Length: 526
Image (cartoon, rainbow, N blue to C red; front, side, top):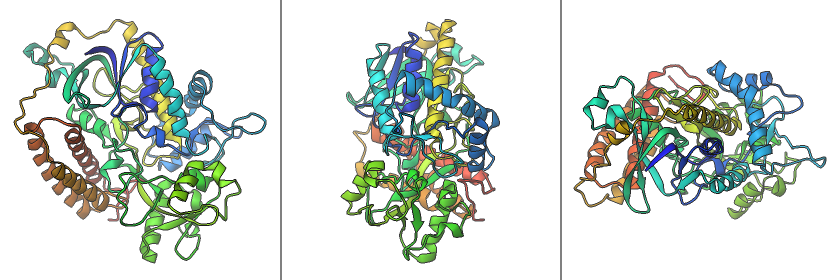
């Protein structure tokens, strides 16, 4: 297949990139791993998206993001987000594709506050903001005749002339270019070659490489793995944010994804308490329950070690004035299913891997270090988040960089800068000469358990040289075995995901090993 733009991933950033280009008449292919556009992390976002309030300003927002990010942020990216983010949100999600954000009785938008924010500035739809955003964007995507949505697709590899071109002449070219991707089509069990003038990585995060995570099942760091193999620059991979409050259903729970208890619950006044009913956060930080996430996460871990308990509790019943079932219907219902009445009982919570602050290095237009390749959303690193993400900034970042990437692609396409037919024709189709019949599900399950256990125990909330050294040794051995397995076995999505997940885990571990300084999400005990 050939297209002007290939977008790999269908969350908020991928959809907005696709829509922005398609609205100007540019042809787009949008890939999603599931059967619809609701399989990524965007739909899981509960709390809200940063906007602006009457007491707010770009400078105040910048200061809050810097504080949460431990001043490890990129100033230019911060100015881009704080100056242009709210106006882009208004243009896209309030005016062009209106999302039903909560309103006050006078019709003005309701604004809430979360940990690390100095003022109320967050738009929300009860506790299902991401789902509401995706419902609006998915309808717009499906109705746009310039966008072809390809479902059940898993990207395998980014195509480049240096690595994939079969023509000797193309290998001598000084400039390396992204030419599209090899893509596994699950519905027909075949690998497709999709050639594109411009490719956008919007593959999301990597929480699923950890034992406990709030992420969707497809969040295994595929964008990081593909970019690394293509020699694209990836930075800040050690900065993995753990959310302090994931619903705890007992040590025997084997759920693939922990249900998130939004930070907005604490934003509305809920308190973290230990098994004795004591509000413990004031002992760890003067901001108490509204401290940045990395501090709250480590405080919970310390409290669990101190008390010997498997979890702590979030008490909303005695501290939140709102009608809990109305303000947090999704959380209220999920707790009720598990036998927890939020109106009378505290919610058992534990930390879980949540957001990847590092990623593929991009500029303010989403351009990477590889020509014709863009990256947007959680798989990218703009420099906005620094060493720790401020709550509800990621949706705004994904929206703005998706919009900027789409606009830049339109500008490039207008210059008629298409790749040559000779270059396109030099890319061969996927080699299907593997000899094995199929993969062994038991081996794949065991390898995933090994990766997740290594990452949770050695490259988790707290890290040390000894733990990281052990993790590198184990992951390098596994990666070597998987490379051999990968080459001799016909492809399937489980095999591609396992290969990508192991490579993403190696990237995080290698970056954590190199960084000897404790900073934000990356906390060294030594």
